Image (cartoon, rainbow over the protein chains, first blue to last red):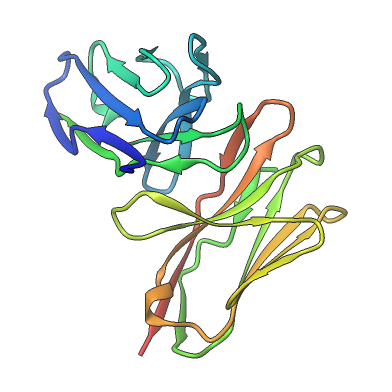
Length: 113
Length: 110
């Protein structure tokens, strides 16, 4: 039981490049989330998927897109990376739709130059 | 008023000390509250949920005061391994989203 896994662990992009961050959970959770964490800012919600087949914007969705591929997988795409998207990205999942305890993946450290 | 506010610290305490963290939240309709722990360069991990009646898990005690919109975490007999950042987390009532405080950094010193 791996919990929540994320790939890649580290990534360096040039401005304007695109990439997809992958997330998978094996806990049969219904809800999945993408956060970014910046120094002094705390965790901020980018997008979430309350259940398979649905996605909604969070606090900071601009510049990102998501896909809930199936119940296990939730990907985050940066279409045209900008230096302001340099951050640590965490994926999380929870059993019940919405605000119950969430379990996090190990994170992806992204640098955009 | 910010949604979830915490004292950023750092709190530097000796081993064996008792330390308390406080957190205030702005949404009076919030129903779920948590404390998470985050080690340096690691993911946040759930430490404990916070219930209206207060709850205890070993050396850790969490309290909720709905009238004052205030949450606390007490750590007794601090261990070196308790060194981490502690995140206060509040469910955004009706939005089914969690709002994270910026965290309080604790360093336990030998």
